[in-house]
Image (spheres, rainbow, N blue to C red):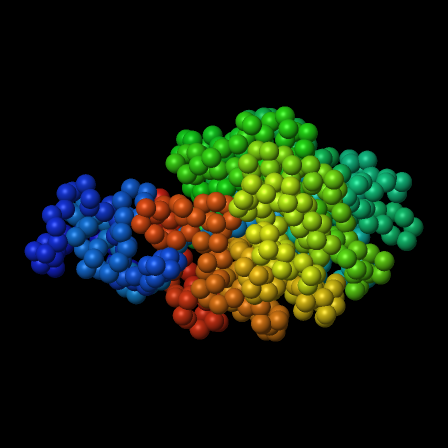
Length: 571
């Protein structure tokens, strides 16, 4: 028997009784959709939790008790009987890569490989099904998650020799789970012109063995040496557009089935934004997008005007920020630190985008009324960005409530934590990174630095800072339930808890995934809570993640995803 009944109903006796004391209702005020008999968390402090919600068009018409909503039900109203299920505002993915989610579905998925041998097996199988010379592309491997490391590894990374043996004629490019490193075989390096004499590019490095030969691992901006060699096999422009269409479709489907109704895209180029804007205007986007532009300063100056969009396609797309990355990721030792890595002496990470360039991008953001969104993971990187932000805030005191953002804000020096609240800087964080990364945070930083500044949600919130949530997909799965669970438990795969005093409460975590994300994009007036007048974006869950035992949160499933009053996913 269905857990939730959906009917188009006539109100019946109850309705006739209600009309004796309710004012007459014109059919135009009848709701199109009503959900009732559930536990509805509005995330609006004035409304609290209610039993029913009425929707008209793409907006929330009213929330309240079943009796208060009953007179809005007409003959044509669809009614979902919730039977006690939990309803929340639609999850807002606070930082991820939209087309990357779709692209990951089209390539080798290495997220769950247990060791290097499994990677080799997957590539060998792909080679058997590939055309001669065709690129083999994948993403998701992470050497710190493997159950063993090959004997000939360098800094924990395997060398290319096995990969080159199974794919001598097909170039292979496998991106690290973090997106901040990649692996290439000999053929790919040949096509990219990489040899033992190739210099490290600015903002990246080529890992080498004792003899100075590249082992196949490229960190940070060095990964671009390989990706630029992959021209797509000379595919036609039409084929490239078809591939982009497929990415968008797959990304939308993946988001909606997991309850993500809005998506904050952490950096796309002008070409991608143009395609997504066209789809928004045509009503062909299933998920609402808020986007950051990621281009060089020169291209920003030349083309930023044509790329600025505000709530186009009936609130389905806004371009609201500019994105730069001042450092890399901790797992690949690219995070820029104030002190040496615990497990690599004389190494403090990588300054990927030079500070001077980030300063200039910030100026462009200020001039164009856009938010500055800077990727910073290491404590040195976060300090540099906070210094840049504070300088601009000081020089433009009339520009209040800028809501500039630091994307990730993962590892902070204690002295810099209060600055988030003092300046009003958004800490755009990802709960799932905490529990996923925890095992190697100790290795990279040591116990003291880990405790003082790693994923310090409560310390940040105590300063008055807004902390948001997300997954950084395709770095992690887009699933908000998994990230919510990580946020309220900080429980790692082995059952240990990573500094439990920094856990969020259930409601704090829900706000970090709804109204806080809306606020971080200047969209709290139209989304983030189930307030009458806001967009009717909401999710029905199989379990009550606000009250169920913590271990059961992970079992919660999305039963309905509703965007703009329309049921776009039903389990």
